[in-house]
Image (cartoon, rainbow, N blue to C red; front, side, top):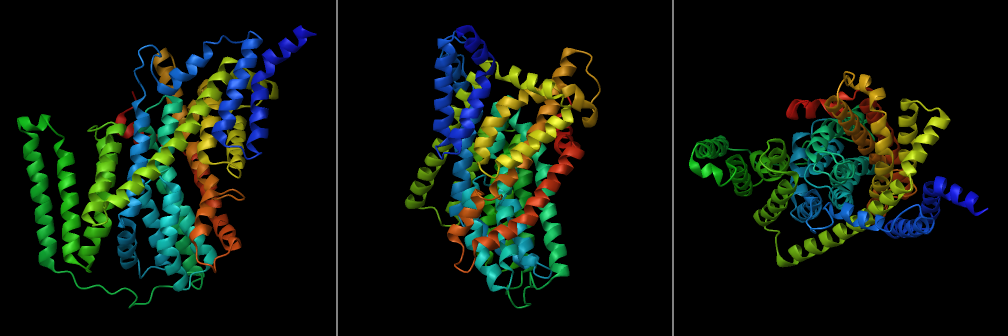
Length: 536
């Protein structure tokens, strides 16, 4: 009898871990406690049954820290980028850059059908590349744009759907906290994931833009055009345009000259040039006032330059993602100071919110690491592979089932929970099926170990981007779409939850269309990284 129980638990303890996790999560227990508790309990049971050795718990510590466990050295510095990116997004929320950006975009798009909604979409896309804090983005954009859209006669469903979908682009468009976690879980380059996510993110943004443009053209009552006198701006003087261009040219030429001197070894002069232009644009924009040039210099150029400082430093090889996160945090402080919104109270609030958000992320990360370590050591991955073989699923059927499962999980769980549970378990399975997906990705059959590793890496990058695009829906799908509740909490009293639910439906469909594009055209995720970093 004991041998039968032992054999049963030895074979299926990984399955019981998943069953217990599913049951406990639906009770409302915090995910970090559920993951960690099940891991510890399952680990002790496995040790009692002599399936595991107690040393497995030390593996959890090593995996969390990324070190060798003996020297205590941390070999996983990429996670340091997370608090820096959180700080950057929170500080930018306080710097009023979004308010200036929305104003200038309304000026530029005021003659286009649905111009205000299109401005919100563009603002969400630009802000996505500077902030990765979805809750802060949704609240900020709702407070800024929703009252204005309702006052201009926009239908509440269209207004709320546009804001919710645009504000959640930050989880996909880099720098994204989710991509940093994915890179750590999959042991791949975060720079490649950042580059690979750009085109799918822009495809989603383009789909939103096209949908709003067509809808506003066909049914203008849903998105009335702005009156001609809605936004008044003073004329821009040509002399000031020439002055700004001259200053920018001098700064760029000066940085190029300094690049040729011995001082170039002390600092990255392209970064110095961008930083100098960044400061100059804000100061001149403030001095220019309410003109088109002033709006561009104050509202549009600063976030764009911050994007260049962060992503350009990574893609140009001037800084690692961790260092670039520090650059972004410094740039957000500088922008808040230039906009005269940096105070001790603001700094204290930003640091406090950063600490809370980072603690939440890392608490779940530790629990998920413990779960995946125990699951792997009790041969959970072998159980999954055997189940797939028993079901006789082909690689494409498995991929579609996984994507559908992630979509369904998004109705009930946050992206962080889904990422930390799904990826460590199923990524090895997808990696083992790389030869089956390789032809679709345009890869030649591997003839040696180096080619096999490259092929597996490409498939994993593609799979990670598919998961990232799919997880966009987790913020919008009821009943637990977090973006919906963030929005409802700060929306005007006339906006009902029914309006928000109705508004997100077309955007969820557009997200699924974007996912289908990325599945059918893997070059959306792989072409840009191969262009920038090569195929080796």
